[in-house]
Length: 343
Image (cartoon, rainbow, N blue to C red; front, side, top):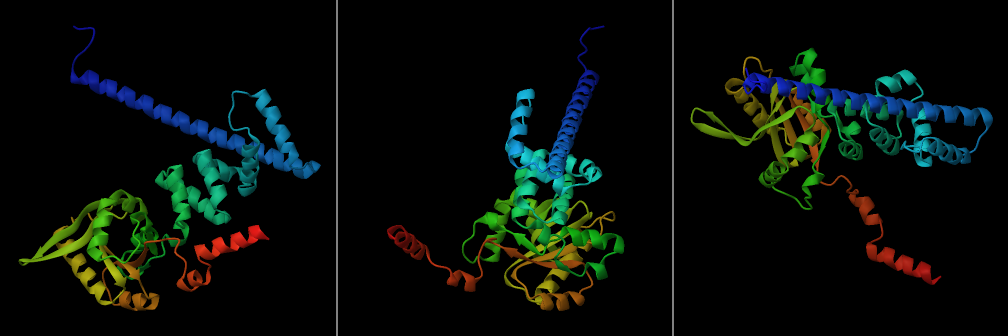
């Protein structure tokens, strides 16, 4: 019998051991991160309490930073700036139990980003929970905050309450947004629907990130055949949380009620030809450049299949035309500063 086995059982065992070690490392890293975040909360609370009790000014933070770094030279994160973050952190989440169960579950850098970019307490908690749920990196979290995800999530105009079981309708509603930010396409002018679709395919990873967790891309211009006639779905996805197909249609202009008839037709075919018995009813999503809310609401009332209507935006920071016209031009700004320097 060989001392060094050379069979598949050995390599399977080796792989299993490696996997366990990797998992243990991840768990250890997460534990360290949680303990560090809780330590920062305790430091912040101690400073806040002492400043309130003893009337200490802001200079005491500089002194504490110097003394703590002298005592723990190998420890990072004891700068004056980080101690100020710790105070803000403790003031933002005064409940230690909440901090332990939520805020400490995400890295300290993520907490700093939320403290910097979000002022509303409820929204801070919302972004913490979404970060835990979706495993966002710090950059993705920052992007979601900048793109106002909280204001858009779950706000699509839909008929889900009337067309889906109660156990599914709330989850479906929470997944779709009132607006989808397509600024990453870098489109400056009006664009035809097919061109928009092609650009989305080219940047499908960015589009999937914007759609949210659980969307799997199936295909574009997805062919459906009915008695020899062919029909093409703009974009077809599968939603793993909802366990159903998502038929997505793009419109470059303003919403028209007739668009829902086409979407309803596609949903009927997908449910008849593609959906498996284990899948739930397919859902339609219509993306338009503009939409009159009341017109959309009336149009959805007449539909018996689950669908929603959302807008897409190509430039998140574009000012309203009336405000844009009221602002001085770059040349006027330049002229103003030249005059200021001469005074």
